[in-house]
Length: 315
Image (tube, rainbow, N blue to C red; front, side, top):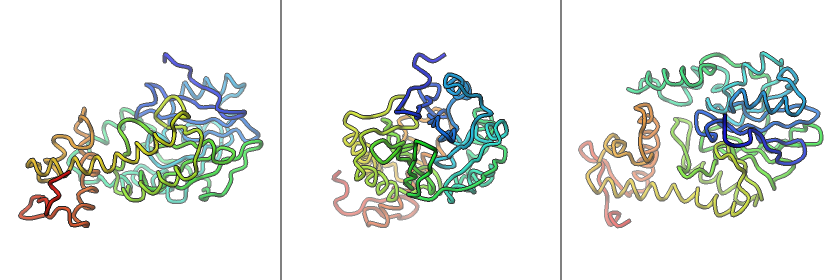
């Protein structure tokens, strides 16, 4: 049992289904839109939480009409195939998500970890945590960036916000005052971009895109409460983490951690690496920063090691 309410109303027809374990990975929040089209945005919340929320609102799983997936990640698509089988509902996603949603191999290709020394460790852990994602999913349609999805009294507005992944999409609820931020998640960890189809610059632009919309409420996939007070400041803080990490990488290189592997061993992005599989994502994110620093002439690669150029020691 959780020590918090499993679901809370955001506004008429719109209910936040909180993930178990404070919505920390491999859990994630979902939204249930209890409207003419009974809709679930993301299917990563604990199945018991989904069932209870629907029953509290007078529904059974078979009543579900539509699942909208924000992106292909395992903690967001998790129960979609099972729910679709029970309800015969539609499952839609961004066109760029289809490959990663439809099959496990497509997901692996998007993660970009085939051949990594910790691939099998990751594969085994996913099989334990989220066994459903090893199977195929039936995507019945797609949505378009900015094109409203009319659910009855509620309209949701897809906002394509790549960077976390190529397909990552936030959703405005009846406009843009309330936005499901998904994995612009405002956690203390900060941005996550550990896949082959992740991109730092796109991620920065996406966060700024949300800031420019000036929402009054941000609903994170990994915080159990929506953020209202100081939302813009929280988005700015989240954005600032990119620069903080870059400075940390430069400092660590100056202290002799002069390869991606050595930088990952500290670690540099994660505060700690509880399982070996996290090295996969630590290395991916460090490599993306290193590539940027190389391109901007802040560092160079000489004799198999990273070297700081000029006055970039001063950070």
